[in-house]
Each structure stands twice: as C-alpha cells, then as structure tokens.
Length: 595
Image (cartoon, rainbow, N blue to C red; front, top):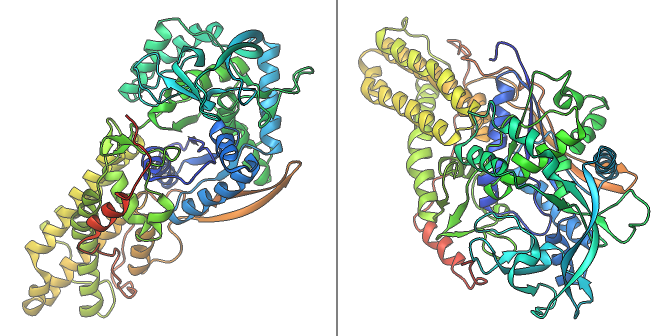
C-alpha cells in the first residue's frame, strides 16, 4: 500500500452516443483506466473515475438526420447500451453520466463566462462552408474532404482521422456535404465566439516543458513540439446548430456552444455531479482545487486522436479558468486496428464489445485486450490472436495453476488448506519470488504499463506452475503425504498472492479464486445503475461503490486449515474453429474501408 494515500482523478474519454462501442474503443481508452483505478484503490488511494456519453457531437446529429429522428432519440438509444456493456465488462466508474444534464450545462456556462470575463474568449467572424441544397452551414463532421496535411481523402471537417491534424474546414480539399453529397459548396461568413489559445501558449509551454518525464514519449513530444512553434490561435467554440448547450450571452440564441469545448468540461461537471449524488456537494474540490488538493493527481485516458484536446486545449481551459488542477498524465494509446484499418463505428468497421460479451467471458476480453494493448504503436487485432491468448496463455498458465492445485487440495486434503511441514528452502524461494511481484507489478500498474504487467504476471504464474511440476505433489502424496501437503500449502499461498495481483485485470476470476480459497466478502465493491432527476429531466447513470476495495494490495496470509470452496474452472476454453467462424462472420459485406 502507499505510505501516504493520495487522491487520483481518472478522466476517461467521452464516447459519442451515436452507435455501439467496438473493441478498439475498449482497448484504447476504457479498459486501461479501469485497471488503473482498481489498482489505485487496492493500493490505498482515493480514486474518482468519471466519464459519460458525449451527447452534443455532430456524429450524434448526423445519425439523427440519417434516421429522421431527434438527437435526443439517438442518445437515449445508445447511452444505456454503453452502460450495459460497462456492467458486463466490469468497468468501475464512480460516475458514468452524459453531457445533456442541467448540471453539465451549468458548469459549461460557468467556464464560458469565466473565460469571457478574463479575456480568453472573444467574438470574430470567420468563413465556413455552406450547403445551398440543405440551406445550412456545415459544422465540422457535416463535411468531408481531403486532409490539407496528409492527403487522406475522407478527412473530417475538423480533424483528420489518419494524421490527427486539426484545421479549419475551409482548408479541406474537394469538400462535400455529408447531408446532401453536394460538392458545390459555398464559403459564407458567420460570427462566432473563440477561445484565445494564442494568449495561453506561453503558460502552456512552461507547464508542458517541466516535470513530464513520466508522459509517454508520443504525447510529450507532440505536445511540446506544438507549443514550441507558438502557432496556437483562436479556435471557434460555437456553431450554427440547434442541438447543444446554449450560449449564456444575449443575441446568440440561434447558435450553440460546440462539442469540443463542452465535452472536456465533462470531467469537471461529472465530478460535481458525483459529489452531489454522494451527498457531499463540495467533495469534488478534493480532486480539483489547485490550492487545497495538492496531493491530487489527474490522469486522462484517451486514444491518440484526442491528444491535442487533453494535452493542450483542456489544460488551456483550466489555466484560463484558474485554480483547478492540471493533468498529471495523459496516457494516450495508439489504435487497435484490423487488417491495417482503424475500427470505426461511424464507418461500420467494428467488432461490437456488447456483441462479443454475449459470446465470451468478460475476463477473456480483459486479458486479451490488455496483453495486445496498443500502448506505444498501432496493433492489428486478429481472431487467431484472441484465441491464442485465451487458450494458450490465460487458460494454460494462470487458469491451469489455479485449477489443478485447488482441485487436488480440495479432493486430497479434506477441502482445507493443508498444514504439512514448515516451509523448506524450495517453498520459501517460491514465495519470496512471488511476494516481490507486489512491488514489480505494482510499479507497472502505477506507470500505466499494463501490457508489461501482464507479461510479468504470466512469468510469476509460470514460475508457480513450474514449481508444481518440479515437486509433483500428485505423485509425492503417495510416498510422503506431509511433504505433499507442504508443497500444496505453499502453492495455495502463491495463488492467493497472485490472485491479488491479477485482480485489476481479471476481477471476475479474482472474485471466484478469492471464494474458492475460503475468503469471505467482495474483493471489489459493486456497480449499480441509477436514474437521476434534474431540471432537464431524468437521466441514467452508472455508479460504483468501492467500499471494501481500499488498501488490499498486500500479501495476505492464507491460514493452514482454512476451508476451501468447491473448485470450478475459471475460464472457458475456446472451441476449435472459433477464429475461423468469427473471421468469416466479419468478412460479410462491410462499408468501404478507410484508405
């Protein structure tokens, strides 16, 4: 456990509520923060993990326009599906809400007015693309064209999915309307509010250039390089749209605050909503107040396409507001792809996480996606790889160790942890090596190196497996029952410690092992769904009660004589042909892939 517990804020990327999430989302931005949060709670820290559905993005309105329904209809369809998937996968959000709440509107208005009052927001006129056929402006994702930086021919109107560049939409080559397909677009002038990022360039550079050695190289290099160019400029934060948060200034009733400004504010508004639901309306300050919450650290888990918004724009907004903690780390992941192309729900290239959780165990996915995590480079997902990792790594190693040891102990030692002799040199060497894992694995979890944590846990588990093979208690019991009992007790103790270390990645299996070893209670708290009423109506949230999960990252003694519960297999082996069947299903006609 940590010597002096600190407060850990974990902000998780806000998914557009315009379609189901795919495994690329989960591997990149949703599973890693849950592993981190579970470990930090076990280490004794006070964690607040928040996120929610992004309801105001143009992907939502585009989807609504395509189906002839309202954006609210789309949100109400997909927001509950996110929560359903997170429950099944075991993501322990202290609060997963959405951005169309009265609370979020109020917090967004507060930041807008503070930025305006302090001179960080100004009005100006700009040129935007207009579709005469639709008789409307085309904000960002209502238009596509050729990226002015890398030449990608299906670039969005605000950001390129291939190279991550951010630009003004009139810089696009060959622009076309997503509404009508019209390529004969007009450039018209319109007035908007801008966040003066140029005024914030120097304080951002000072912040980003100091004490960021723990940042991932890609994030640090990109951020500092952008700021050193000193090319930040005003960026429009309003749009000519009808769906979104109103502008709290008279005379702009037909415009709305745009999503890139309001979505990141969700980290703060969700913290305030959690505090209110928790019965302590000011408790959010313990993670956010720059003067009093000096022991707090904020981590933002995102995909690489969101780096500029979390390492430059959101910190700029926080600096401009004043008095709020800046990010401690932005552990952005690269992409999990398939056959070299990015998973994309908007383009129909996806493997739905909700779908696969109906067919496979959640811990099988948690293990596979963590072991193949795109932490430092893009990774190609294949079904063969998934089957290999589940069957020949997870089951063959950790699952095999637990199953054969607990089954043998339950059957041959009266369903109890056997006593045997005092541990000899071999048993002690095994346990000393496993105990050291708490420091090594804990350091990897702390550094957000979850892929390396899996490798180390597999190594430790294999060490214990090899010890069982070398000592052969199944044969030894015939000639020396006491020696066999000693070996089994040592291995059961090793399993208990390894189970604690595996728990952030494999929480469902960890609870089963916890119970089979005869321990009472929950390793972790409980997730629950709640309906919340506010001035905007009723909305659905996912919450987590982590009582009992604090401070459990330690080698707990397994008492000799402790009753064991009936052993059961932890994992279901994937059948031969699984990869071929899934690959064939995915090979059915799909929308055109990205270039």
